[in-house]
Image (cartoon, rainbow, N blue to C red; front, top):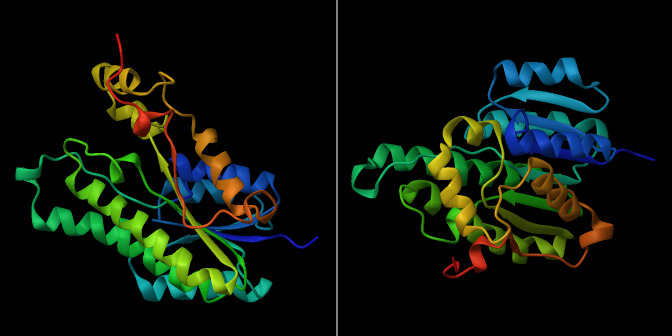
Length: 247
């Protein structure tokens, strides 16, 4: 059986790394696009080139993305899936956020996702695109004006892509995670932040990376999600549907 071919951005760490592990176990050949660095280099020592290829590129550089996508597609004569997981965040109050800071987040999170998806879709005759967004793109969050706006934009882009690409056999959906137990969260979320999140999530805990990755794999699998298109699926323990939590 031929391997399916996946383009995965931000696959060197965090949620993206979890998706990479799941994709390899499911038999996908995965091309990881991420910034050059130790995390990306480590993938070369961990995985066979038959399973994973790596590209140290900035997703906002359309020329670099196009060149990398062509290198991925040519040997297989196709691409079967895309997961846009690369992104950056900021926690800065509205009145203190500068236009330059706002533009930087939009450039990576929105324009980068657009560039990668558009380039890859040219090599797809069917398959699935999954955009990783956030509950911050659905609910208002203090200090997340740029990040939340960027994820809300990708949610809308997901719906438009789904309508336009469906006639070409390509489904497009988004996953909006709530709090996730990533290395970055472990580093930056203090005890108060953790308790605040847990008090507002009905399941009372953070998601594991595997729980987000599992949903991504479902959306990539045409046997499991062939009629799912244009959806923003909150994998958030119930955060976005909860009202006031009773004591």
